Amino acid sequence: MSTNETSASASQDPYFQSLFADRIGGADYGKGTAIYKFEKIKRAKRKALEDHPDRQLLDFGIGENDSMAAASIRKVMAAEIDKPENRGYADNGISEFKQAAARFMQRQFGVTLDPETQINHSIGSKPAYAMLPACFINPGDITMMTVPGYPVAGTHTRYYGGEVYQLPLLPENNFLPDLDSVPDDIFRRTKMLVLNYPNSPTGRTAPAEFFEKVVALAKEKQFIVVQDAAHIMLTFDGKPRSFLETPGAMDVGVEIHSMSKGYDMIGWRMGWVCGHPQIVRAYADVKDNSDSGQFIATQKAAAAALDDDAIPAAISAKYRRRLEKLVTVLNDCGFQCEMPGGSYFLYTASPTGTEGGVTFPAAEDATRHLIEEMGIVTVPWDDAGKYLRFSVTYVAADEAAEDALMQETRQRLSDAKFQFQS
Image 1 (cartoon, rainbow, N blue to C red):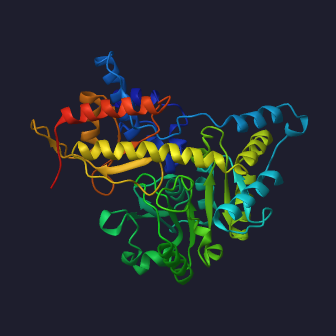
Image 2 (spheres, rainbow, N blue to C red):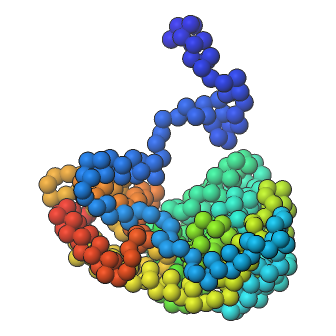
C-alpha cells in the first residue's frame, strides 16, 4: 500500500479510533469481519424467507418465552405505575421485593435468607454476571466456566485482565464439569467458578452430590461459586434444586435467579443475587455505581409474581409437554435424544450429513442446511462436540397448533434423510 493510500485509509477513521480500549479491540475496534453465530442465523433466516416466501419457517432457535406475563402480574404493574411513591430511583432495591424473594427461596427450597443482607435485586440476571467479576477479578486471576454456556461473566473477567478456564460439558461426564481434571496451578489462580443448572443449552440438572463436591472443593481451593439458576423453575426430573440447599453452600457463594424463564417476564428485567452476605454486599456496592435500580413498580409486580406458585407451575407444564412431543418427533427422524432434566432447550447430537452426500463438518453447517433447505431454525454448538439446540419457545396458540407444528417438523426432517455418526 502506498503512503497516499495509507493516509487516505487512516483519514477515514475518527480521531479517537486509537483510543478504544484493548479489551474491545483497541485501534482495530469495529474493523473485524467475523460474523457471530446468532447474526449468521438471522441472515440465513432472512434468506430462507426470501427464497421460500410461501413456506412456514419452523423456528426452534428462539431462546425466550413465547407468552406474555400472567394477567395477575400485569394487573399489579398497571396499578403500581400510577402511584407517585414509585416514581423515584430504587437504587439497591425495595424491601418488598427482597422479602418476596426470601419467601420464595424458603418455600421452594427450604433456604432461609435475610432479605436485607443476603438478597439484592438485579436488572435481569445478565448484569449480575457482568458485575460479579468486578468484585473479585484482578489481572491474572481466573474464572472457571462451563462450555457451552452463557459467556457474560467470562467476557467481563477478560475486561478486568483475568483469564477464563473452560470446563467442557461432555456426555461421558453426564454434562457436568470434570473438576478432577483441573490442574493445581489453575486452582491457585481461580477466584470464581460459574455454574448453570438446569443447564443452558444442554438441559441437564446437577445432582445433590455434585453440588456437595463443589462446596468442598471451593473451601479447599479457596474460590467462590456463582450458580446461574435462571431455568430452575423449569425442572422436569424431580423437585427443583437450589445450590444454596447444599450444606455449606452459603459459605462459598451466591445463586442468581431470573424472573424471565419461570414467570414469562422476558423483557421486564428482574432478577436477584442471593447467598453469602459479604458477596451480596460487594455486588451491591458495584451495582450502586453501575445503575440506580429497577423501576419500583416492576419490583412490586415481580414480588406479587413470586408469591404465586401457580404461575411457574403452569409455565413448567407447558414446556414439559412441548419437549415431550419434540423428543418423540426427533427420535422418529433419526436423532438420538431424551427428555432434558430442565430448561426449555433440547440439546442433541448434530447430523453428520445426508443420504444425498451432503456433509456437515460442524454443527453450524447442519444448522445452515436446516434453515436454507428445510425451513427449520436451530442453534449450533460446536464448543464441546457437534450439537444442535432446539428450543420449544416457538409461537403456538394452543395444543392443536403445537401438534400441527410437530407434524410439519416430522415431515420435513424425514424428507431431509439425515445421517448420524454411529
